[in-house]
Image 1 (cartoon, rainbow, N blue to C red):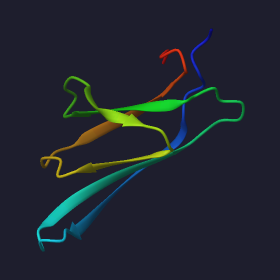
Image 2: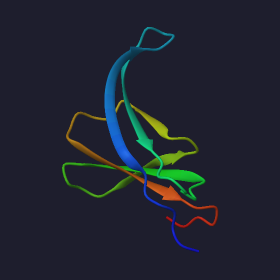
Image 3: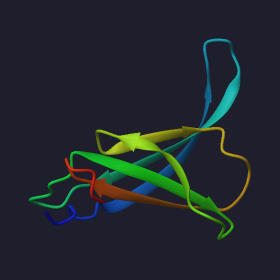
Image 4: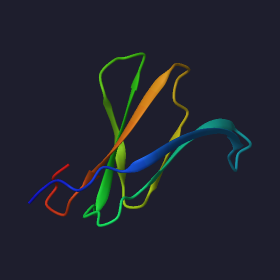
Length: 88
């Protein structure tokens, strides 16, 4: 089986939020689209800072993913579609 089609239109936003204990934190949210006829069953989310190594941030079953309190820096993000057989 072929790997599923890559996600499209990745958007990244940041927000300052307060948790239930009144602690302020930064939420980075990634949102992406799915091409027609995609066979993705989940998504692999990765990031890197200042051109460094890619870091696995987690998996998502839907088309968004939240990260909390990334250290200050310049980041790149990528999202890979994952098939039912784990291919991406």
